[in-house]
Amino acid sequence: MQKIKRTVHSAKRVNLINKLVENLTSNKIFSGKTNRRKESESTIQRSLFLDLEDILMSHFDVSKKRAKIITDTGFQWEQKTTTSVSNFPFFSRQHRPDSVLKLYDGFRIAIELKKGDSGATLRAGIGQALVYSTQYNFVIYIYVDMTPKYDIRSSVTGAKESHLISSLWSNQNIKFVVV
Image (cartoon, rainbow, N blue to C red):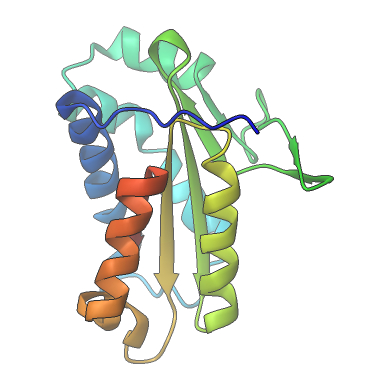
């Protein structure tokens, strides 16, 4: 059986992932001014992903021209009309993340966003992220907590939850955040 080689957590890559997560999760759609309960998952994705060019320019010291090239050619998103995210087979079924950011030398980051208020949607997203980790260098999984009191978001500091989040990162290169 062939072992899947994990991408190394270099300081540069960890910084990139952390900055992307920080910027994606601090989007205005998650502020108290927007009622995210009314917004569809695709609307939330659109709000997050349309800011990607600005994120690259402001936080990664990338020129406007280079940021445009990256987003035009290296960013695939299921709602972007000029590109689409390719499916890949796993357990005889086709899978694809919501979006993929392709950077240098084939370095690829899958981004998955799930909106929900149940254990079923939370588990489905974790399962999807695990599958994507077999094909991509890193996976960013953003779970949008729709519970009335944000119970899921509040629980991430629990011992079992923290252990799982840490394990997903260290063993599978999955950055899992709840907003």
